[in-house]
Image 1 (cartoon, rainbow, N blue to C red):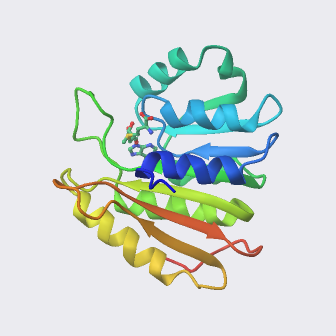
Image 2: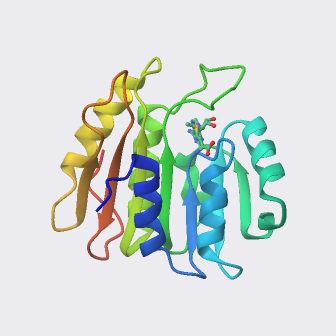
Image 3: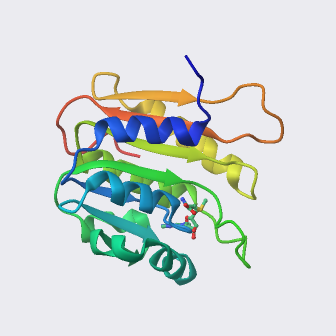
Amino acid sequence: MKLLRILPYARKLLSETIQPGEIVIDATTGNGNDTEFLAEQVGENGHVYAFDIQQAALDSTFTRLGELNKRVTLILDSHENVEKYVALEIGGAVFNLGYLPHSEDLSIVTRPDSTLKAIQSMIGLLKKGGLIAVSVYDGHEGGHEERDALLAYVKTLHQADVHVVRYELFNQRNNPPFLILLEKLKDFKIPGQI
Ligand code: SAM
């Protein structure tokens, strides 16, 4: 047995639950690491909707994806508006909270209200058995508030509806990131109100 760091662990679980041909969401595209991974998972008949509020992030992801752009729609909008773009069931979703690495403006970060609205909408869209993986980095300004709001919200999800798991390397120094995993257990449209 080998214990995985949080990002490889999230990918392992997502690769086991996402099926070729499905629609999936990268809620925080950034430089496109997860978008690329998701595009590989869904295969040529699937599709990735990838959100970011920074054009620079979408440009960098477009360049990175090359041929895989055929499987991806890049959307310059906040992830909380996901239902404007995606009406069909999704096979999974990924969030990487925080700021765009190496960006000139590190004050552009994910925020509690929009993050929670987006997660709530995506739980509604998610297939039964599907997974949402949220990597939480709380070292930036406002990071603690977002972390606390997220933890408070996911605790309200009923145990019969969603399994909520927190995964972390417990003895790391300096605000280590952790993972919140949400597995949808049955079909329903709207999880508990925020
Ligand atoms: N997974 C990314 C990668 O592979 O590079 C890193 C994501 S980075 C930690 C967080 C990203 O979320 C930033 O690019 C930021 O612009 C974006 N973001 C912040 N608020 C957002 C929102 N409301 N909707 C969509 N994206 C947002």
